[in-house]
Length: 94
Image (cartoon, rainbow, N blue to C red; front, side, top):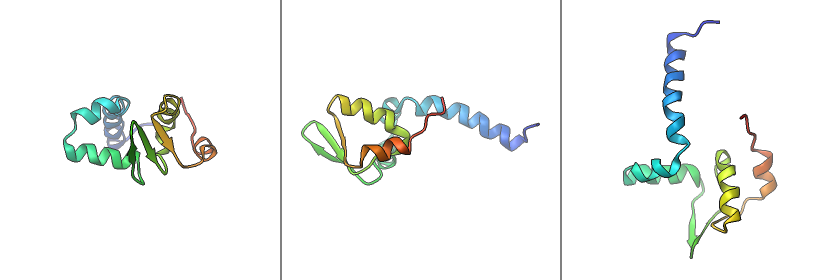
């Protein structure tokens, strides 16, 4: 099967985007204030509340479940959405 030119461009763009998206901290730091706000709205779709040193949110973007479990272990993030919902809707393709 041969790729169309538009498919090839899509894969090239994806190859450029993946390294950026795998380092969200760097992306956040280098973004403008508007970019930072947009990124936070994508990660914490329903909003966030800062409570001392802990971030609370009703739900989190399912793509970031691995990050959630790491932050939860450190006591930095509380997601009020049931964990079984997160685990059920998370699937790793790696």
